[in-house]
Image (cartoon, rainbow, N blue to C red; front, top):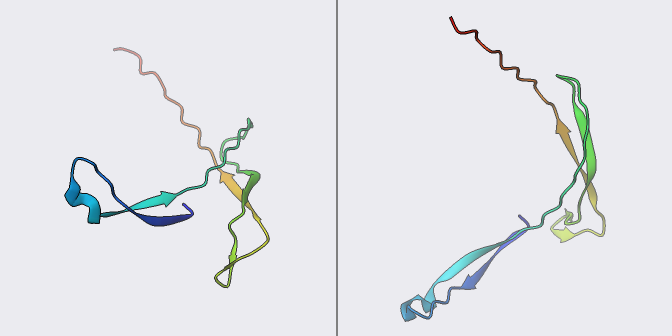
Length: 84
């Protein structure tokens, strides 16, 4: 979520609602797709996402920073129980 803005709520059916304000989130999304084989218990580092909204001392900075995802899978094995 980048920020939240306040906007007036408008409902044609309810004129009393004209004084209401609603908060509207402004979001940024990115996607990344990959396939990897990771041995059980080891960690994979995924890079490629970028944060362009860097703020330094309250002001937007002309730089961007990379976002790294750490993935550590756990293998779950279901064992069949033989009917008695």
